[in-house]
Structure formats: C-alpha cells, structure tokens
Length: 395
Image 1 (cartoon, rainbow, N blue to C red):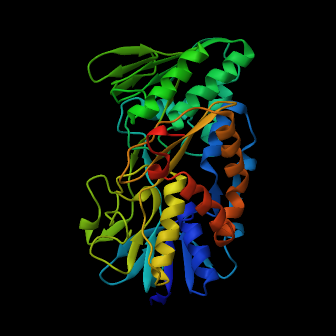
Image 2: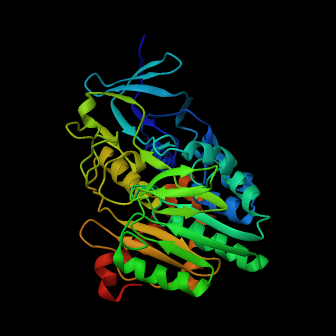
Image 3: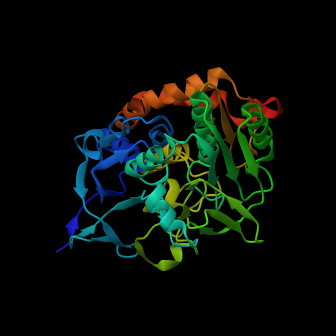
C-alpha cells in the first residue's frame, strides 16, 4: 500500500537539505529520502587528499542537518513515476507525493576509460568519498621526486576549478617539503580552464609556482597502469609516477517515467529558470543531477534550492544560473563568477578571496541547517558580486 506524503525530496546533499529545511520552517509537510545518512562537505576532500586532514572534520549526518520537522527515510529511490506522482524504493516502499524535488547529485563512472578503475582502486581521488581522498594522501605524502599527474577527462564535472585546486595544493605541498616533484595537469579544453578570462589568471599563477606543468586539448583515451602512461585520443603519451584521475560524470541512476525527462547522459531536463522538470509543474530538480547550462557546484545547488522552495511556497522566484566557484592556492584565491547572461568576469587571485573561502567553509554546516537565517548574508554577497555589477573590471 502506498504511503501518502506531502513534499518529497530525493537526496541528502546541499540542495536537498536546504530545500527541505526552508519548507519545513514554513510549515510544509516534508519528507527527505536518502540512501545514506552521511553528508560530506565535498570540497573538504581536497584538504584530506593534500593536507592530511582527518575526514571526520568534513562529515555530518543528514539527520543532524535537518530540521526536526522533516521526516527522514534512509532508503534508495529506484523509480519515480511523474505521471502517477509515485516513488518506489529499494526496500519495497511505495510513496505517493504532492510535489517532488530530485536532488540526487551526479553519479561517477570509473569504467568508461580503460584503466581508470584500476588506477582509482590504488590511488583514490578527491571526488568520490573521504576514504578515496585518504588514499590520495597516503600515496603522495612521502613522494620525494617524480611527477604527479592530475587528469581531467571531461568538462562536465562537479566544481570545475577542483582539478586546478588539486594542482595548486599538491604543488604547494611538494614545495613546502622541498620535494623534487612536478605536478602536471591534463586538461581537455584549448585553455587551461573552460572560460578564457579565468584561464589567464590560472595560467599566470601556475607559472609562478615553478613546479607546475599543464597540457591543453588533451583528450584522455586510456591509462596503462603497468607502464604508468596516460594516452590521449591522438596517441600522445604522458608518463606519471602517481596519477589522480577526475572521474567521468553522468546523471541520476533512478528510473523515471516518462524516460524522456532524462537526456542522453541521464541528467534531468529542467526549465533553466524555474527548475521544474520539463512538462511537470509539481516536480523539480536541483543541483548536479540537472541538465542546466551552468556549473555543477555547491552554489548553484544552494541558489537553486532557494528558488524551488520559494516557488513551492507560491512566491515569485527564478534561478539565474549564477556561479561562484572558488579556485584556491594555500594563501590566495579567486571566484569564477558568471550567470546565464554573462560569461565569467575577469578574475584575480588575492589573499582576501582565500580568506573569504575559509569563511564560507566555516559557515557551511550552519547555512544548511538554518538557511533562512543566513539568507540575508548570502543575498548581500551575491548582489554585490553579480556579473552585471562587476562587469569588465572583474574582481
């Protein structure tokens, strides 16, 4: 027999938790379903991988981040029938809803590139789990010489500057240790970052380090772990002593009816401003699981969650495609800022922006648990740094 619920949110990431907490505080009947009770602060994986931080610093339970009025179900959603407004789970539950919000995040695939899974099992990465990030640290912390390669197989990834952050933080670690290790970034775009204006600042900073190399337009085709070589689609080979591969990303693994609401990569098709699933006014999707033409990042999930919650509450609200992706070194940072109507503004590394990133990290857990209390703080920041305000002078 089907359980009747009000608003059902699928996924315990930032987008799902923020949406749930806003709606619960406004008196709505909210149920959140997640296959895990663990919520990691994923940008923290960088500090586990390249600083040796304890994983527990970046982990909370979903339940402790949820408003007590949110009903939490730990189960895996297997099917969503948008026509019948029904959900099926791995444990055999059948749930009917009034409105649904899909916030499952992207899925990671280690089998599309030959040799990737073997490399991942040995080396780990800083994209998937805290345990995988610990593997990276254990593999690089005692390197005294050689070359660490960070490979990016595709541009559609969570936190687009994360490969560059890993490059800077690992290179900084080796410099501090006085280790004779060079770090090389393999990147698929013609520039070292997808946006040309941002690429200029990153290239200049990489040259300052002295132990960073990069190759652009490098389309990774395969990995030979025995010979320790990465091969491109054109046959170019890059040798490595240690290799960290960014995984290929795909959309949700949930079965949808109708299946046409998913694109070829299984991302949920949504209206780019209203975030409702195409063809449905009672179903929404937020964050990395969507086909939105903007970056997959925590900020887009955060702003999307507010837009969806307000629309469910009957308020006028829309998502602008705003990004605010940080790229950091040990002591400087910049933010990649754009929206649907503006390409990324010109950017510069500064110490202030690195400090600002630390402030955002400190605020993270509380901003999930009490999103409405932090709304004015974030609104002030986002309005002051709108691409239309920054313009060609950048930031």
